[in-house]
Image (tube, rainbow, N blue to C red; front, side, top):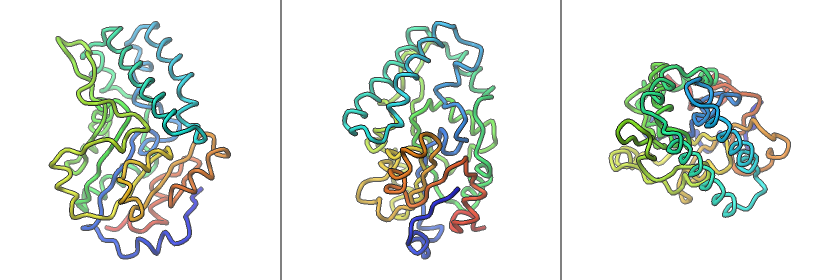
Length: 268
């Protein structure tokens, strides 16, 4: 089901390929709403210890309901999300996760799949030379490999995420600052990416949390086409999504269906 806010199509009618760039979340935005997140790939790989899996699940059970609670105060929630991400990174270090295991898990991802039409959407954007910036709170190693596995690792796609850092083949942390679901507004784009989009003022923003709207700078949000994928606690969060997104998709909406209604997404 797709909700389109009044005036949305009028707002984007004069957009063209040279004026657009895309900022998108990854987990459950490009992938289906029932896909595992990239943080869950290790637990489903059969390559890690039960102790790691049990501790990871306890963190998930405690923090995930907080993450999707749109009623909670932003500052409180932001602090708790930082806490969750740091604790999970701590598990990778505690259990001495090896680069070999990470690479094996990445090349055999079975717990994620693209939304219907998402691969075609990415190919279309590539053909139209529209930059795509993926800002993912997941594990960048897995996001990158998933794109490679699906022949979608195009040169117009740039990934900002939590890439695992290794020392002597063992996980020692992540390469940059932690990116979680609420602090994407604090992400600094690499200079080459900033340069690429500086003359592309129109943004297509895609996410599955209200906080994903923050991926665009506050001053740019009014000129962004904001598309939200709502899959959990739909009744409770529907109004929050409709207040913050121009388009709200439920029931695992595919990019094929979305593109049929929003013509800017499927020009050839």
